[in-house]
Amino acid sequence: MLYIGSHVGFKKDTQLLGSLMEALSYKSNTFMFYTGAPQNTARYPISEELTLQAFELMKKAGMDASKVIVHAPYIINLANNKEPEKFQFSVRFLQEELKRCETLGIHYIVLHPGSHVGLGTDVAIDNIAKGLNQILGTCSVTILLETMAGKGTEIGSRLEEIQKIINLVEDKEHIGVCLDTCHLNDAGYDMKEFDQFLDIFDSMIGLEKIYCVHVNDSKNPMGSHKDRHENFGFGTIGFDALLSIVYNKRLEKVPKILETPYIDREYPPYRYEIEMIREKKFDPGMIQKIKQD
Image (cartoon, rainbow, N blue to C red; front, side, top):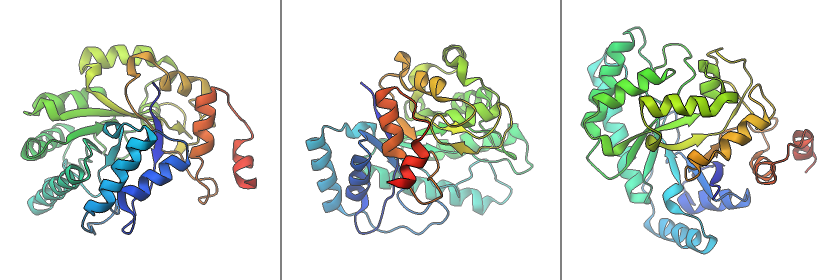
């Protein structure tokens, strides 16, 4: 079965129910969201009533709630311990996010590993693992380390770095990986040879650790380390390569999430992209169609 969806909003007045309704409007059968603004710590209480309504609607719609994903806020940086109080802030805030996930009934949260800001890769990896070891095991939520493009001092653009972090994590049951196709392309991995990539991943980390895939095209050539997403099929990875990733049998049970850009920063493309994916047919006029609709 294909599990396909997109990033959706999470608003104070509608919360998980609103996120679900937005996802259903795109004809999705899964989705991903932040539990609050990704750039700050402002959070409001989770509504039990709205959460219950959301799960009732998921059941009616035939949506598997275990495939729904939360994304951790960008301001968390476990790689940097130059200032101990900021490192501990990241640990505490991520712990709080995991508790919010648990309250919402969500099992997985995607995390950017962090940036070393001059400390170096090895120190950063140790810091990330130390932070994760303080957090994991405090609840039932699994943290998924996202593969990164390698912009600036980002950690996680090489599988070796992800592997080292996981090896240092004590609670192996609650650590996994989220692949991002744009990031992998920009990091230098050829997404047109995805099965070869999966072979390498399996030998280093294990395919069973992949719990989510962000299926984004890229505006950049392979190895550019720039991290600029493009709409599905309109970038340098291309429709056929991305489609083969979405339908790869080895990741059949893994949810695929679109994080592609809004058209003119105004119109969400997800319903149209999901339609192309389901029909397995590229529509070169999609962007113009969205503007006209």
